[in-house]
Length: 368
Image (cartoon, rainbow, N blue to C red; front, side):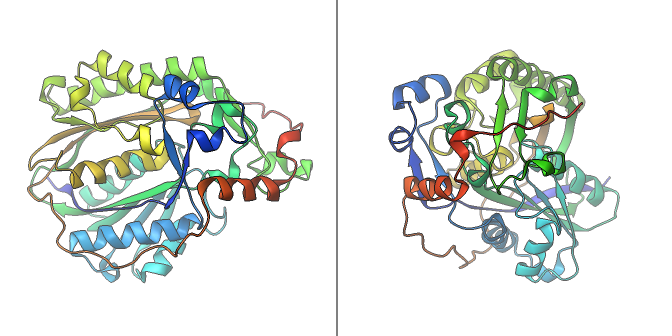
């Protein structure tokens, strides 16, 4: 049986930080209010499009794997905040990398997009469709944010990370997974203003209204991530005591704690980035994976569990067996252009450009 080992990893975080005190300069909120409800202390705001974040993260992942971009067979980019709908963002990354032989596709399942993309690429490697693939999780949500709505504005941030997977005879990479969707609750997390259904509202880019039912999302997230974790572990033939490190979607500290308790994983075996990056949607799991590797939390042969949920409401969990190598084969000198603005200044510019964010707008709800 062929496996799809993870052989490279890299991240790219925007340098501009928006902490809770910065949010309090234009929202009725405070560090205590945000921290007590979410565990978030700060998040990043990107000064560049997501294609550039993805390019840097991908170049670092390829260098880590010792793989040249020209040898890539496939690029899968997971996101719900693409630079453009047409053409897809993955093709832009292909162009910047010079990965001329690679197929390129985007996957949008909101916060689970990276993991759904990892499943797709892993399946193609296992079945021999491709030999190797680059899988990216990236979000630049800040331009789409309703910065007048503190229920969502305090939660999200920007970032990117990528992994390289390659065909292997060793039992590593994704060894079991469970994917699903609670579509009956899809209306509980909706960004109105993004999509053709809103075309008659004459909206400016980024003028959005977020529907976010926090209590229902909390309940569905805990249930979905817990059930998916238990199902994936069962498919892998192990129980929660075999998990060396859980790297969950970083939406909210309370959700993570509740899932860990249900699955039976102690919090000291759960890797957290929510406090410093907030919810980066599809980028949270891969960024956390890269940082866990950088900090030595992933050992050769480690068993990892990566539960997640997102808009739709999609949910999933993956059991990953790590290979022998936990250090990069090489490094990339590619980096982002300098940013001369603070996180607050970048957000203030976004608010000015959007113009009518505080006024909101009336838009029809989709029928489904």
